[in-house]
Image 1: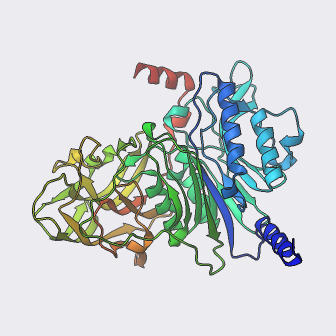
Image 2 (image 1 turned 180 degrees about the vertical axis):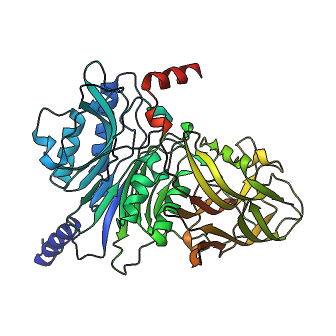
Image 3 (image 1 turned 90 degrees about the vertical axis):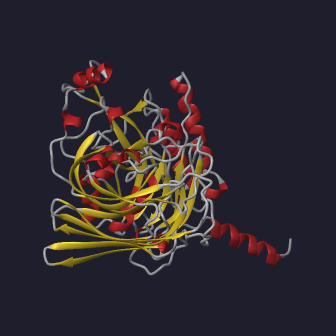
Length: 509
């Protein structure tokens, strides 16, 4: 081998393993869409899951990553483990008194020299309480963060439980968990359903945290809470980096992972019709620099396009829709100017459609404008309050068909028109705790690329004036609008009802 070749190979090897530093304008992140194994033997399931995690961490696609995030709930119910207190700076790889999962991932992090985030079911010793078992154990849904040495440096116990988790515990005072990396970024973290509430998610963003890791097992709900739609909207409205790793089991409504760079939008996303195990990798901009990330852009517009659809993903309908003030846009109406009000909350719509087919040989969506301010539920699991101005797709002219999609037995779906203009404005009263997000989703369950719309906010007296405006023509819109979350402070019946009553109630249903 010539000397010049040897020098080149040395430099190439050195560069490929060089860590990102605090002075670099970006870091390299990986999020994993992960389909869990499902066997009757819990230990076999765990072994398979852990082996697949190892393959992903050491896969060539992950080689340059500084941090890798795995989803929520991919390690099944029967697998519980103690988790060391981060203040004790314990490396489970060296401690044989921790569960196999924890010690193995600790070793992977140390060997790969990466920050690794996993989600698991934690067990903690207890003496009494409604969720303390006869064996003196209480359980939490918990994130664990390992540094490049495999040391546990952060832990977070889920605050807002979903209905499948009633037997888990929550802390009386929620965690506000963060960790700081050697590449100069401090991350906040929380889990799945927490995203809909002020504490800890929005509270961390309001405190100035600019980067988040987010294990989730998200259940799709049309038209405002599909996974990537909500994740991009939250990241965009807060202008934060958001690394969402999703469990992949689309037959039960769960799929969707992405890397989002605030106002820049999505860097990488995946939403799948079949169970998938895949790592997405991207260079994520550190917000104090002017680094321009490589973002997802709109496809070249084709007015005759028959859009792709994803019909293999199961979904829920948001029944809050039936409370809203709505108005159908007649199929023959090409221009609409409308102020729609729910009590004293008003939304202004300006919509322009351009006809593209003279004869219909396919199914087509109808569209309704919706306006609403008031109480409702998140997935019929927790209550909240909302302010919504949006255009939503419906499979026919009835309101009950909105928040639904054409299923795979409908062979061809192609709107008779495309949208050349959508401009929606909403006037929101100033509140101490409020987040108004851009809310967009297309026929493939993806949010619209941010180069195809403009989202803005302006303070006018005691009002916050929000606007979302389509900037490129679009054929296959399912949702386009403003989704406001008012973060109402309340006592959660879901988390406080005694576990015995919850289980009985669920059985009776």
